[in-house]
Structure formats: structure tokens, C-alpha cells
Image 1 (tube, rainbow, N blue to C red):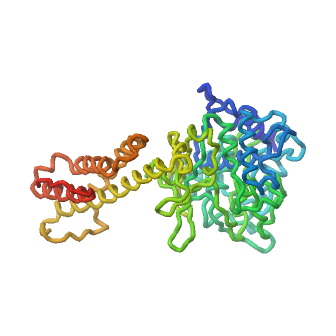
Image 2 (image 1 turned 90 degrees about the vertical axis):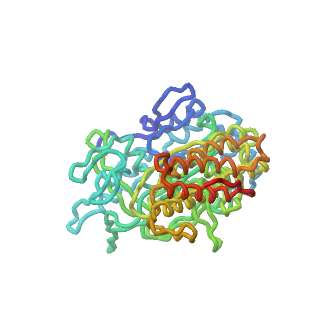
Image 3 (image 1 turned 120 degrees about the vertical axis):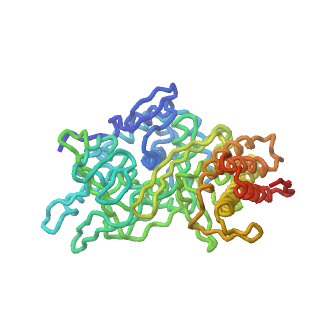
Length: 531
């Protein structure tokens, strides 16, 4: 075993300082300098999403100043939500984490070695038992391969190549700092289905469940400095987890029994960090600077603990159940703004709990950071994204209900016009290209043959709709009906998709005119347009 890779001190987290300069810090320096840091800059958004939950749990352990008040994870304080919010305000007023509290947490004997990525007994967020449990029928080691660890690399004959070209026959080692990012991303966003078999007693199972955040988009209140963002990353106590049980994070507790029942879901550490469905073990090179192999398998087959993650938007189904909103790489962040402002939207959305009860004095300056991973529920990864809104939380329902409802109307209008544009463009293509089409008859569209205009119109419409949305995000325009600005964006997108060269064709010209009339029909008084 090499020298190890201590995540407390190794500079594995890229950040941007308030001065604008880039830097890399370990966990200890991140908390000691959080008030000097403006942003996290992990290039793997799902890793950043998981890391923020880990940092939020640690924040609850070290705030406020050492010996000068109740911690934010105090179970008794959790029973008084007003008192808890007041204590959070007092922590925020300090402006920084207390160095003594930071060092007491990271440097104490209690967690010695548990922040080391390659510790022999308790490597950070890993299970060393996999070395003996992930073996073949003859007892030989059966690792998963480093490509299985790194998101974006293909494994076997499956998997999209997101970044670079790698093969299982010639795996490329990954630097230890990057391996830490992908370890976190695997635990939160890892796939379901077939995995490296794990032998425990007589059981040998080679399939597992998806990570707790798989295929979701995560929303975080984002301040001008990391200290404030981390304090706001501690979820307020509610009934979704047990605040009465002893709360622990995976690095703070004994290794769990893979065949036993899961521990109660506690607040806040268990809620934020304790729901992984995967077990991972990294294999370092001789000097512990790179990961050359990895074991990735299941951690439990017990039913997943029911929890409403505080950073997810939930959509209510018709049967009354709620499902986390899925990430969509083609969907811009502004289309979720109303779900961040209204406690419960008109379309059945439920706002992330992390955006409830924000400090009144900060709300006007807070943005929202989103991390999404566009995936299916099993093995396929399409891509990830990161985006940040302007300071929209000043218009939350609690602070400015008229503006919140105005922006909701704007979004609804944009979606309505977008749907109609898609229909109108498909209709226009059908009318223009079907030689047997009777202009006076009702057109029957084939969903398998939409034609090229609908996709091209959509590609042009949504950026234009976003510009219109932010122009309408002005309190002076509260009483403006939003349909017409989005309709203008749709008309321009339709014309661009059809193109000027084909408009001279009489059939295309008539199809275009009919499509434009279909769009104009959205207005209360549709104008007449010559064909």
C-alpha cells in the first residue's frame, strides 16, 4: 500500500476564489477558506451535486463557532423549526466557519484515516470487503475495471463515449483527484442492472439498483460565496427523516451489513449521504497518485429508503404519488424557474425543500445552481449539464406572489406555444409534401414521420423563447399578456425552419400560411393573414 491520498489536505477540489483566481483545495482548506471562495468548479456536474450534499452534512457538524451555540444537526433544535432557522441566521451572520470547529472535526482521532481515499481499513466512501467478496469461482480477484468507475467511459460493448476514447483491453489509469469525483458520482448516480458479482456467504449476486439521484436534476440555492451556499445546503428538519436517531454519515459509522436491513434514515447526514445503492473500492498504483482498477458492485438489495431529497423538484402524478423531475439535456433551466418560485405549481410540481424558508435578507441576491445528469433508469448515460439562474429567488411566492405567478404564466405560455409550434410545423410538412393531400380535408399526422421542420423549428424557438422570458421577467411588465412575445418567436422559428428558398412553391406557401394561422389561433383574437 502506498502513502495514501488524504482528502482533507490533498488539493482535489477545484474552486474559483472571490478574486477570480482558480485554486485547488482539500476538504479542510475548503471549509477554512469557504468565505474566500466564490464557486466550485468540478468539471463533472454529478460529482459536484454529490459533493455538495457531503459538504452540507459536514457543515451541519461544524457550525456554529466551537463552543458558542447549538450545531445545525442538533436533534433537540430540530423539533423547533423557528429556533432552527434563527440558529442558521446566527451562523450566517458569522460570515465564515470557525477554524477551531473545522480542525476539531477533521483532525480528531475519531475519523483518523476515514478521509483517506486509499486507507486499508476504511477508505473514504468505500467498502474494503470487496477485495475478498468480488472474486470468481476459484477465489481470484474479479475487479470491474477502471472504465466502470469513470463516468463517460464505455464498458464492454455498451455505453456511450462522452469524453475521450477508452477500451477495456487498454484501460487508462485516472488521477486520484479525478477518481474521487467519479467515486462520488457513482454513489449518487450509478446505474442499475448487471454489475460485478459480490459473494457473501452462499449468496452470489451480480445485479444492483440505481443510485438515489439517477436521471435527476438537482437544484441548490447559490450565494456569492461558498460559505453561505454551504450553510444553505443544510436542509431544514422535517418529517421525511428521523431527527431523533443518532445521525451519521457513511464515513462516520461502521460498515453496514449488506444482507441486513438498512439503518433508519436520519437527518441531516443520513438523508444527504446515506442512501447509496452501490459499493465501490478503488485500486491505486504504487505511489497512490492514480487509480488503476476499481470494484463497482451492489451495496444492498433491501428496498430503497423512502425519502424526498431536499434538492429535487417533484412532480405529482394523478394517483397522488410524487416522482422526481428527470434531467433533460435539451431542456434549458429557465423552463423550471416557476417550479423554484411556487411552493406548489398549477401543474402539480412541488418545489425543492432546500428553497423553502430562505433568509429574507439574502433572498434578493440568491441564484439557483442546477446539476443534471440525462440518463435512463438502467445503464445508458446521455450527458450531464450545469447551469445557474440569475437572482430569481427574490420573486419567490412568499416574497412576491404576483411576480411568481407572472413568471409561471410566462413559462406556461412558452410551453403552450412550443407545443403548438411543433404541431404546426409537422402539419405544414405533411401539407407541403403529400401529393395526394386534399387542402380542404382534415390532415392525419403520422407520428413516425414528423418531417424535418418540427425539429428545426424547435431548435430555433427555444433560445428565442428564453430571450422573451427574461425580458418579461420585469416587475414593470406584471400585467403584460405573455402569449404574443412567444408567438412572435414561434413564427420566426417556423419561417426559418421552412426556409426562404421553398416558399415560392405554391404548396409550401399554402402550408406555411395554414401553419401560421394555427399558431395565431392561440391568441384571443386571431388576426387574419393572407395565404
